[in-house]
Image (cartoon, rainbow over all chains, first blue to last red; front, side, top):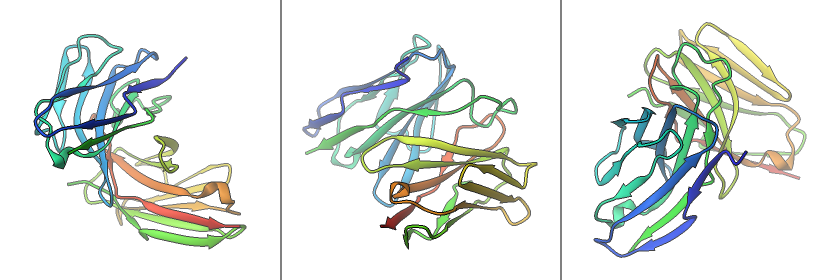
Length: 119
Length: 110
């Protein structure tokens, strides 16, 4: 049981390049999300998905694209990288939405993070 | 925004002392959660408290929730050097994603 797996761990991009951060979970979780973490800013939600084929925007979605073709995978695409996207990115998953009334056993699992530098 | 705000931003204590971190938020919530993040690692879920609960315990952790004041506190008793980490509160409303605060950096000096 691998939990939540993010790749790559480290990446350096040039301004304007595109790339995809991969996130996979093997726990059959319906809910997946992407956060970015910047110094002094805590974690900010980029996009999230409540199930295959369903995605929605979070607090800071601009410049990012997501899709959820399978329950297991939730890739995050940077369309045209900018220095402002230099950050640490975390993928997270849980059985259902964190604010669900049914929260018993709904632990949220985070990946280990992807460090992205845009130069 | 319902974003939680932790206080203090940084805390340094001696091993064996208790550490208290506070979290305030702005809107009504379904539950509040605390996470720990070791340097360079992902977040680890510590404890969840529902809006109709006032206190929860887990090992050396004690969490309180005061919905009238829209605040929560995390108490770590008899702290250890291994407790050195950043601690985040996160709030959730019904059927919504988690919203995180900016965190408290805890340093426990041996």
